[in-house]
Length: 424
Image: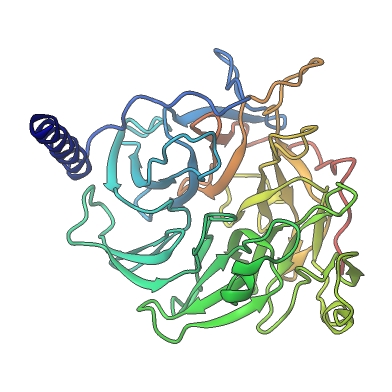
């Protein structure tokens, strides 16, 4: 018995040492993980489809469930890699990787594991010499200078985030205000279709929080947001926008997901209302006041679209029809008929949506009766050269979309047939 115990302890120590050694070395990423359960991945040579006069290339492959993107001023790209606890029991990479195109060919030929040992990281933001990471259980700050491929110090938690009792709606979107004085972070609810005991004991669930970059002055900015998928400030107005994933009704039918301008102190419906003042049939008797004050979103997506990453286009590489507008990754869901699984473009004017969403990047779902799912867009970001980067968390790829005809004007944006027009 004693010899068996000694052998077990020795093996455990060796495994721990191996994990530590791996975490300390910034090298190329390990071999790719197999595709997610029920998703075959991309066939050889296949890739998403962009509008006429655009070209799609793979910027980086063999990632492990890329979640969020951050483009640095020097052109380097940071990507968070993580998985939820419910993703077929597959381990989460729990890291932030730095990707670099050192040759200018449009492809990341160098990669470095910048931060490891995180807890299901998603949101990323940079302020001066500090990198901020939205772990599922905490906002983390890391010392980092643009151009580095390794941190120049240790990361430290700045603020705990609600994460008790599980990882339902575990992703934490993150954004830095244009004046760099505050961070905003989305914290999803625990309950799926209505609040549960964790929502009652952790009142910051289903909210967007705001705090200073040093973690102080934390407060709730907005409430009634079941699961925030993406956060971004609209450049012209400086207003904060969020993509939000909605619930399923008792009938089994989902309600529309949405894009909303986030107002200080506003309530957006969860769990008492949706689409503005539509009451949820599961409401308690005293819910009328919540329904009445629920703020309607600026724009709705087809139910089940599962909007994720959000980015505003402020460059001039793309034609004028896209400039100043937003791109949203509609992740869709693996269960049921495939809805979403595309990137849409939304025109903006005067700081708000000026038209319905139009398909921009499609082809994530195959043709034919089986409708095989090849990939799923999870994040969008605008590169320093004006191209669009799209993270694909099933295909484990970051796609780059390039406008290839400077003298051409692309086809007018055609709304998705199931899209609804903006509200206001």
